[in-house]
Image 1: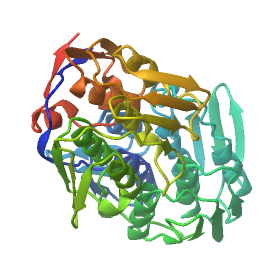
Image 2: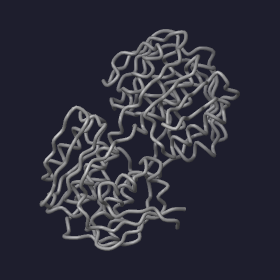
Image 3: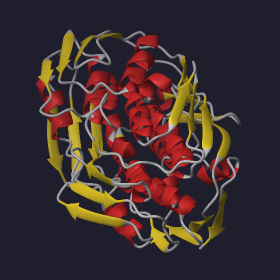
Length: 419
């Protein structure tokens, strides 16, 4: 198993290209199951979660081909079984996204209850209740969701809580249902909109994506298309914070600035100069120490939970005291304990972290505990005195494409080495 070695103290300078969004690619790959012909997906990031999803589709008999530019063709016409096994689903919670498409297109699905990052309970009851309201017969036994339906029927679905994967699963299922489905309290994330745009390109009738009320008029069939995934706003935000935390000057390109509003507001509060154009954003913190910022996570368009750890790292060396309140997941502060090993002054009180900025962090061996926590440890390593080693970086590879190469092109002293 590999680890990352980082020599801190370099102010990052330069530009970096943002990859396609993991959290849009995974539902779009699942949504390809709805098509009656081959689907080609472009701007796909080369990530472990994408590889796992491709393996999952392959296990079902779906024909998946990949070219040298990471364009993926999915041909669901060869599917042999409608089964998502535990050994794949346990590594990635997004595997639950095949449930809706399999049930809508083929009338049956046996999907393991999911695993994924150890950041708290993420129950699938909203997915199940929504599909049952659309007429599915569902039993949970032996750790599997076993769902059957001749043809799903349109329904009005009021989601108990805002859930991205729940909204996506039910929206996909509704595209082939008989009649109109209305999803109230729907997630509004850009990745949900990207999935809706993909489904619309296939012939789905969807209105309201990006609002809390999505209306889907079911159709008989969806066709194969070519679709380009949108850029990854979390990767984009992470590199902007990397520029700010190192007192550097970083431009991200091939990005969607309109998806980064909440992040940009906090970077400016921290004292950074931020500029943007049609598809780029630039952060400039040269000659300045960041100021502490307070963040509180909430569903889009508010501050994203997936950027909480990165701003916690920024606060560790900022002037002042910052608070981080996590409202989405109840177990997402494990990176705080690792940053303490590097000299960070952090006090935890329930779902709140109080961070007193210190003059410097010092290198220490640390361990990645989940995907975004891994990113915060990389950021901390970029500013720590000495050489930081980060273990269990397979978490990073789930969501960041060649992070060490992209940081190195900005001047970071970072390399991947065998453990």
